[in-house]
Image 1 (tube, rainbow, N blue to C red):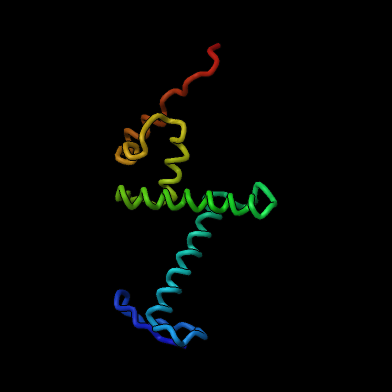
Image 2: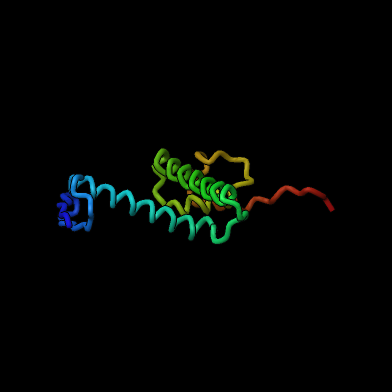
Length: 130
């Protein structure tokens, strides 16, 4: 067992490990990174609806997981670059709703709620006019 003091939260963390050659801070950072991966997969399962896979081959499964990972990372990058203040889930919902609209995502994120609601309510173009 190793102990690590986290000065940001002012707590002592204890980790069970069999690798005593690494520093306690390194092991703490590895656990923190591992936890971020757990959060990522939880988010994918909850929000990207990967409850079943579209294919059964290893390639099909890996393609679906990689696509979800790329989408999540793009959302995270957009949130970081635009300093978007809401959650990644909310950003995902906006992208999902506005997928067929002709508006840049950056412009979309800079709109206030009233303008966003107005865009959402615009009449959809008709393919066939009856």
